[in-house]
Image 1: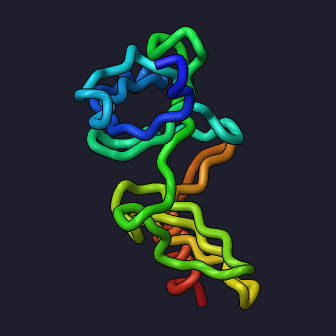
Image 2: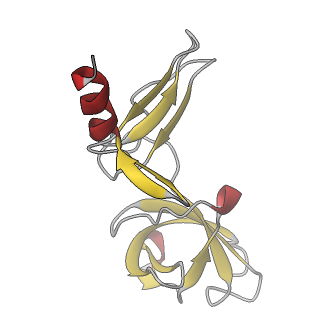
Length: 137
């Protein structure tokens, strides 16, 4: 394993509370790693699902120590919106379910089944705001 520091495998077990996953490597007779920490880019939390392909980096000591860098773009995992001036962040497991999309036209699009704004003084849904605006004279 020392010569295979960078690996591609499939998520086989998830420890949500500790942000760790075990990875199965089909090209290594389906060997399974120990639980590995998932790298947190910008303090974001979004765990991959069982069966997702992920990229891992192991220390030279073997499979017991390493990090999961995360999913990568491929034919099974691709973006719904692409381009040189496009930023898209998916929040759901199903593409298009919930996302923020900044388009090349300069528009920020937010899509979610529901949106709740929360402050120290309370919270309100976007639907409640729209209803208030539509019912005021």
